[in-house]
Length: 147
Image 1: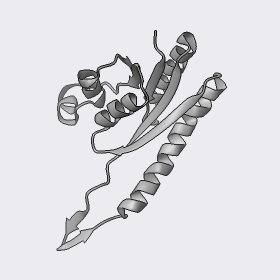
Image 2 (image 1 turned 120 degrees about the vertical axis):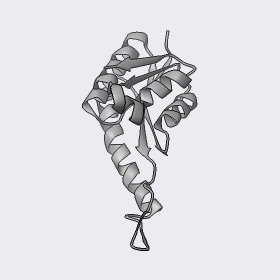
Image 3 (image 1 turned 180 degrees about the vertical axis):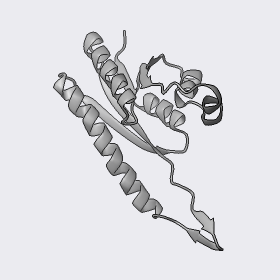
Image 4 (image 1 turned 90 degrees about the vertical axis):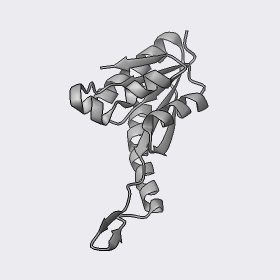
């Protein structure tokens, strides 16, 4: 059925449900597992009173983002290892997380993506959009959405 599963996580409780589902699926079908985390893009500098404020440099931001990603992905790896699975990890800093998820799936040669949906509805869904919806719309491989 599936040979390689990519599970996208953001470290939330809902994402933890998606991780559990991906681990169970990998065990059931004997698939490989890759965990992926997309950090938000570098924040734009603020401009006030004629001065540009940059909270941290791009290099510092990349280091902080990598540290956060390692923490989130280590939790997934530990859970997979406890279930008797090997788990590769991947991380990217991305302006569009959905594009990063699809790129990570392609790089990992994943034949299915497992991810959570926060289930926004109404105006918030319209204004904020949904990374899950964008992955569903643009993915060439099946996407399993966990809620």
